[in-house]
Image (tube, rainbow, N blue to C red; front, side):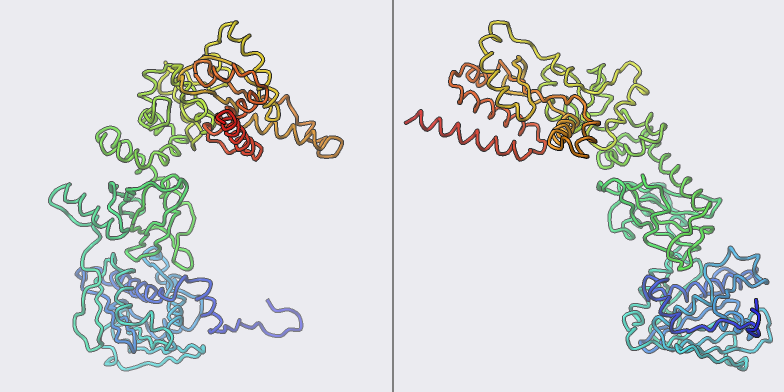
Length: 611
């Protein structure tokens, strides 16, 4: 559009140095991608050559890399460029060969963009030299393009003898500070890293004097090869997974999605990982390594595997270092998730030993999946391990002896009641770990004969035996002193008889009750202020903690008979402190102070008595 009075339209002027800085700091993660871009250009040129000459024998066209410390050269037998192509693709920033009308219908066959990809070479080079001859026009002359980091370039036609065969040669003159990326050993390592699964033959030589060079990708991907037996195939895939990821997989899962041309393996990790951690997966597109950190290829719950795949139809982002989030990627993610579910199902149906080893390591991952996946829930819930009053066991084992399953809301609540509940014959599951409470409540869907309920303190205390009336009356004075001593903690005191007799006291208290008491205390302290009104409106009748003394314990029987008021108060405080410690919940400062004080008071009393 031309604005009034501004004259003719103008084109943008591109500062090539600024563009290279933009590429190096914001588009590409590392200068090493220059070699990937050169390989991508060469592979695309070979793809176009095969389209032009479909009858050519497989392997007749290839890619040759050279590096001797003074230059890096990539030579291919691809379709090549005419002078018009050079002006179109190399002299115009942002135009790619995939946008050309002649090959628009072949878009899906190409990996990269020739123009922008070639510019990435300025990350390591001061000058880029391209010599090419087109296979589309047999009598076409060779054409030379020479670009420099200052943004200038030259184009000229050369006689056919300058390049007798069709194809393209790109030569880089490395910058002095780019030696880390252009040394022969590094170039070879990068070629192996990015191109080990390429379908076209790639060779490397550390001299430019010719010669066949060493193959960079001597073998096809392991899942593309044939093996004499299924066992040999399984071992080969596991060995490849160990080579790529550095660990011996617990098992390997073959991945095959013909609709998008995806093949590969998922390696089951031999050790547990934190829930939700997304591992990087190696994703190749048409054989070229795209990313080692493509976490988006699998759903979040699949953190127990790392996978390496090669795909035809996945779309790279502009930097070609990750995957573009589109409907195809979403469909691939769902399909791969189904493959992982199928593997779990097969293990559950036919390989209980493998399933057991898998669940022992990755039960948390499976629990996270079972919460949202009814099929996995029905299949594996009876097999999953839980912490219970019968020890660590599966719900299937636990429900055989406990038709009513009680589940705690927190780990500390379970630890408070486990020993007493077990002695009372109650079946309690620790529901405080991630996903456990949700899953236990779904057990009746699998075992309809089993009832599940949250553990209520009243349920537990109802299973503790009351003491006889005479014993209760004899302990009344002590209980009154104990209640007074522990009133600061909103704690009631009761006397019961329960097993095991070695447990002197049980502190029944929940996190929710403590929070409600804290809120009530804040409301009292802020009474009359704005916060006091707000907290007062929220205040409910705060449930009290309960210290239950065990009449069967010899120490308790001695304590309730104490007739010295101060000693009685100190013993009650000590019993409360010991019960709080056994609950393994965080202690409040006042409780820590009470434990220290009661210990010192009892020690002082003992020393006075001895003297």
